[in-house]
Amino acid sequence: MQNEDLRNTQIDLADLQRKYAELFDRAPVGYFVLDLEGRIKLANNTAIGMLSATKQALIGKPFSIFVHTSGKGTFLEHQRKVLASHDRVVCTVRMKKKDGDILYARLQSARFEGDEGPDPVCLTTATDISQIKALEKEREEYIRDLESFGYTASHELRSPLIAIGGFSKILMEDYSKCLDEQGMKLLSTIIDRAGKMERLLSDLMQFAQIGTKRIVMEGLDMASLVRSAYGDVSPNPGERSVKLDIGKLPPARGDAQMMRAVLVNLLSNALKFTVPKKTALIQIRGTKGEAENIYSVKDNGVGFDMDYSGKLFKIFQRLHGERVFPGTGAGLSITKRIIEKHGGRIWAEGKPGKGATIYFTLPGG
Image (cartoon, rainbow, N blue to C red; front, top):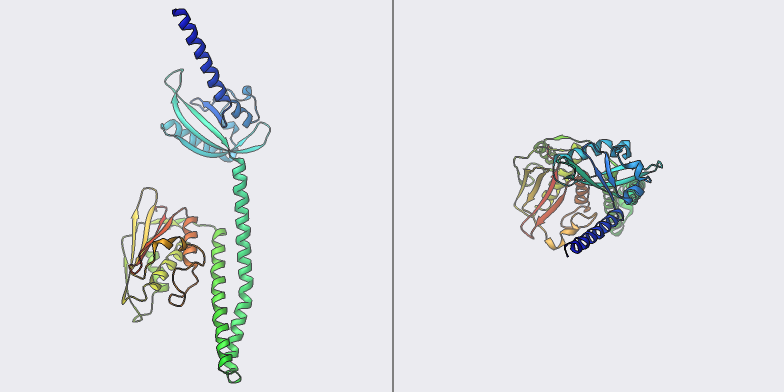
């Protein structure tokens, strides 16, 4: 009876081992087991096929020899983090196949205790994301082409619009005696519409330029940037009552020119939407976090309905009538693009008649 039970147990165990081996070898991702030195101890069939190799060509070889030169530093740092902790670590590197082709692989690794002793080994899964990378590259090229087209088209259209507006002003100034009231009214409309279109195209050019402009990262004194930006948009003395309250702002890292444009846009908006108030109050605040800093620009203006907040950061979308609050509706779209180019986030909170607050994040200084 005991021998029969033992035989059945051995048969079940062998069946489980066979199923485990099949599952391991047929998994949709490549599995590698690496020793402390980064040498390959074990690889499944998917991993072998991914590198167009044989098992003999992999076992005992340093994993790093299959990593493209451009990714060796990334992989070594990846391996160091794995062996220094029990957390799962992820990275993306270019890898070299045995036949010389290149693939993009997403590596996920974790340390575990091996069967041969207390020394940890590293279990690494590799997913071929070459197709995803190719699609991303195609999308980026498409976006660049679209941005280039938008910039070129806007630039080419601005010149005739400026000419139309300029000639219309000459007609109004030099030939007003030859025109009746209706003619003068039509000229005034032409000048107004040409000016509006020129401003729209100018904003579209700026929006397109952000995508291709290189960021120059440096330490930023955010309080100084706020004061400098406010100097550009502040109303003339005696024109309006405005209270600017700048709190203690932690330093950040970013492109000074781009971030100045962000603050000019946000302060301009705050000033514009507080026009109905007897005294405009604009508060600038900042909080230092572990991975990022959070900044906010708050005003006591007309606010907005949160149900329509999704429109705020879309190009040329407006929540308020242009006659009451003039502008092209591009400022927040440009601001969002700059913040996201810095790896940050931007969002808004508001309530009709109770003001609005724009929040954004930046890397810490």
